[in-house]
Length: 87
Image (cartoon, rainbow, N blue to C red):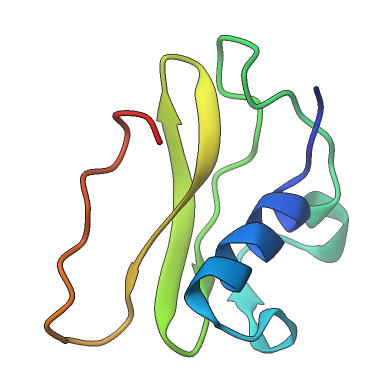
């Protein structure tokens, strides 16, 4: 099933409570909407970094599956879980 980074980032922003409309991202609007298969067996989505008010977002891949990972933007007491081992 195909998806876009916009779709995956919107999901991540919902999880973190960041405001998607305030996001700064290295992807253009067109690139945010390019479709790819996140489970096809190779990297299909473009590399990116996105900044929300509270978190920094980035692509994660494991065994061909892709999703958005994120870590706190500023120092805090929140531990970041392992990335890349499945969700």
